[in-house]
Amino acid sequence: MEDKIEKGIPFPCRGKWNKLAQEMEHGDSILLTSQDSLNLMRAFRNIYAKEGIFNCVSKKEGEHHQSGCKLVRVWKRKVNKSKKQVS
Image (cartoon, rainbow, N blue to C red; front, side):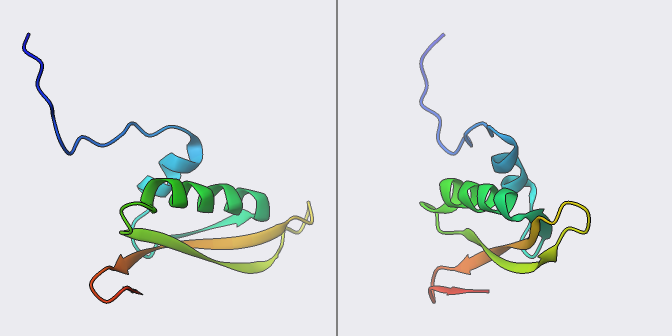
């Protein structure tokens, strides 16, 4: 078999937060505990920081009734590279 360099093959998705970040589409959101939201935002940074295509935004939304954990909503959003603005 001849060695052939291939371009554009995506890296395998490792970890639950990376997988979740890749499965989300522009405008999707998810409600998480504050620690889980940090894990998801870190995954966004790891996956999309270099490309600059997507990023995320978050907002605190209260507390979980039983556990008392703070809840945070995280959205995936597309970055408009030509104007360096977020849509």
